[in-house]
Length: 246
Ligand SMILES: NC(=O)c1ccc[n+]([C@@H]2O[C@H](COP(=O)([O-])OP(=O)(O)OC[C@H]3O[C@@H](n4cnc5c(N)ncnc54)[C@H](O)[C@@H]3O)[C@@H](O)[C@H]2O)c1
Image 1: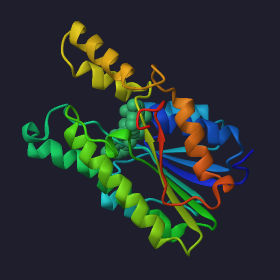
Image 2: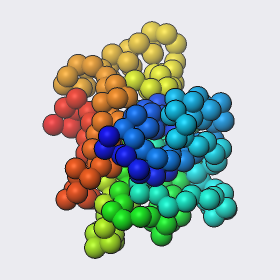
Image 3: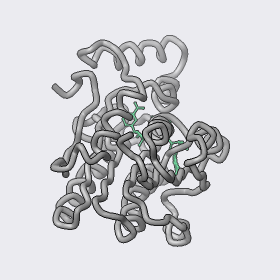
């Protein structure tokens, strides 16, 4: 029961990794989980899985006015999992609108969350952002996404330094390829069935553990960073990647 009595705000809570974090925080005693996402149907499912402590609010994390209007209470924890992949194209082929959208959701959304939540936080507070292995190593296929996740990583470190004496720790996880709808989308973007399975196999192979990660394996790392057990851990970008960056 690492989160007994804790209040958390979780973005991207309608699917994949955000949902898994929410579900497990609820199971470990959280008192109140504010679940944010733009997907109403997915949010309702997560809310149901959180057994009464989840409270869904449909929201676009890139919308500053929506953050201003949000009643976020007094959170102990902020988890920023909302993210999009954008088009799987080399950077020079990325349309400007798609580039702006990736940065709006992945980077601006993470910044706006901190802007809203940091002043409201109870101490000790903890923030966990979602970067990626693609935020540490570049990606020929997912160039715009990779650039955005590199920005999330440095946003995390700068926040950690800024809040180091204010009893708020800030870290991020850098997942490798994890079995969620986003990974399916990455493979689907490769083209026909043969191209999709070739990309899936190439992605699997580049993880020394020779498999994809499971959502619960990332959630466990997030929960550790969000918990008091990580009391002296701040500014860290933790790979959860089956050895991909080793
Ligand atoms: N799955 C992976 O392999 C992987 C690897 C590395 C990093 N990540 C990161 O982990 C995080 C979670 O990814 P996931 O795999 O669970 O993906 P997912 O697609 O299953 O979930 C992402 C969630 O973010 C929400 N979202 C997207 N744009 C939004 C917006 N503007 N406002 C509010 N909500 C929005 C989506 O509706 C969705 O519910 C993302 O930041 C992603 O970049 C995932």
